Image (cartoon, rainbow, N blue to C red; front, side, top):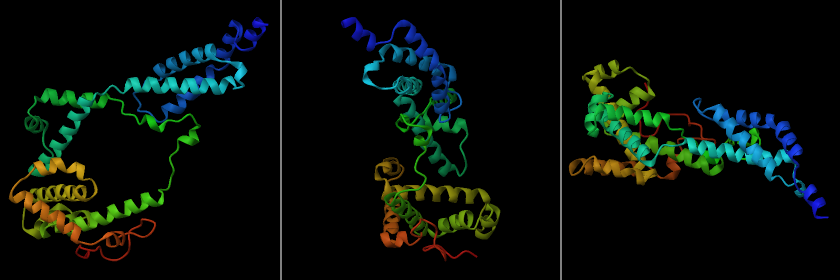
Length: 297
């Protein structure tokens, strides 16, 4: 009796081999499905190898008495093995990511100060590292496979497609951010506001703006960078305060007081209703002149 039960609840060697062979195409299908969402340098061979091993283990651990088709059972095991393989590839340590963020922050600050993109030597000097070490940091980040593993599910390819339209809460938040941007621009000092309006909204060349204001083109570039830093910090102050630590370290005394006055001026531009008024209920820009900005010529 025991032998009969054992025969019903496990694969024989011949059945195991047949199950693996007949489901080999399943591995290729699942690997192709996943590769469509991965960086090009992820090795197909490594994923196939992990999938094949998972298929063999699935055949050994399969219990026909549970009534689950072997294909479904194997699919779950193979997907899990592929995700484990990808997690192993995402080797970038926290220190690598921290250094990368520091490089990015320093580069933005130098751009605002210099009015142009800093050279690698200038960036390395500001960070206090050798140019070779700066290059190594960039190479480490580029090699890292940054994956949103939570996005993978055990469903079909259609299940992996994100929802195409935002929900009501997402739409309101999006509209409020746009409104804050308008108010942040309106609160800029007059010259910075004029440069932002002319360059980004009216799409005028820097040479024209420089001639109008009686300054050099490089000075316009510097004013533009200064305005963008102020806008970023102004938005973060109201929408993402935890990002304001770096901004607070950039200035003190008179500079800090001017920044605080700018943040307060943004708040005085209007309430939630005023911010939402810059877009329609569907998030599209409203017609007419932008509040807080000079009318376009």
